[in-house]
Amino acid sequence: MASHHPLTYAAFTRLAVADAAVVGLVLKGSQAHEGMPTAHSDHDLYVVLADGAATDLTRFSGHRTPALDLVVVTLADFRTAGMPGFERYALARARVVLDRLDGGIARILAAKAHLGADEAFRDSGEWLDAYANSLYRSVKNDRDGHALAARLDAADSVGFLLELLFALDRRPRPYNKYLEWELARYPLPGWDSAPLLDAIDTIARTGDVRVQRRLFARVEAAARRAGHGPVLDAWGEDLALMRP
Image 1 (tube, rainbow, N blue to C red):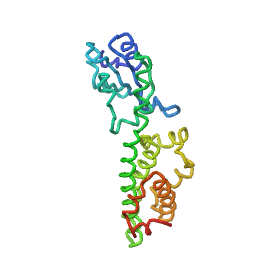
Image 2 (tube, rainbow, N blue to C red):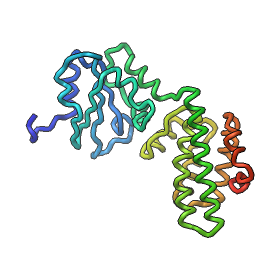
Image 3 (tube, rainbow, N blue to C red):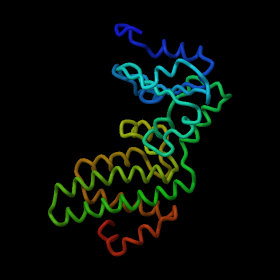
Image 4 (cartoon, rainbow, N blue to C red):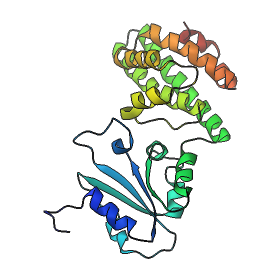
């Protein structure tokens, strides 16, 4: 199409729906999150092709404009997209626009939204250790008068904490942009979203040691219930510095 008539989401969707090689269309990003789109939000669309199908829609692979981003993939590649990877959350909360597989596209997305039991246990143990490490460094730096280092380590710990909490619930961590959206609609079991977000905000902004320790006490209890006591016990006497 001519540059002064850029391809629109509606126009491309019509092309894709009319092409039998397309077995699925999946919209991700702000447009897939109710209440999140703004005047600046583009449409991020996965175009899923039947394996081995021939179509000239492949010419749109990598298409990217301020209004429309296209990812053209085969069904086989779509099954593994984001598994694991940064794209997993985007697909976990994506919206099905077209599904010619009798719900198969929706089932693929649903699988991405839930970590397997072994995967979740392994990941949460690793994130717990990373969280404890940053927390410990933050508290120790605060004790020793290194204020900037303490705040930076506290901010680092927040990312690891979120990875941990969502892994414990067998879910991919949402992007920061969608954290409040996610917790408002899908709270973490055992956590009140508003106080949790307040604590995270305070820690990220100020590195307040008292807030960090209070939050760690709750995290420690949850982690031990999930079977991660050995990860924590490996910290030995250093746990005392992290606890209230």
